[in-house]
Length: 159
Image 1 (cartoon, one colour):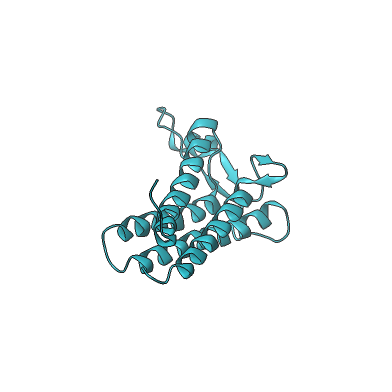
Image 2: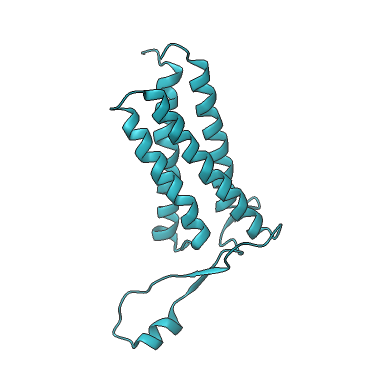
């Protein structure tokens, strides 16, 4: 078994955390019909950026900078997740209440398509586990993961 430096572990986590959370989001969307609201999308964008930054860290120096930027993206998604979870739990009002989900073209008129488009509310959690919504889980995993990545980077002074 090879030794792994803290920076290498941070790099792998910076890639794995957003990849796993995005995979979970898409599996819940396409596998279980839990369509994202507007604030759900807001949480995905920083994970896309973090994923790209983590990939760059494998090829471009300085490695620690790219990993730190990826961790910042992960933390940003977690902060948005916290805000979204607060909206879902009724702790505060959100800036938006719903988002339309486009339906496949079925030959219906434009008015019928608009009237039949389902609305996904940002202030209602479509699924919870132990009282924690998907936005709440994103907050927990993203903040803990992002902070752990920063801790690993600070621990490894040699790289």
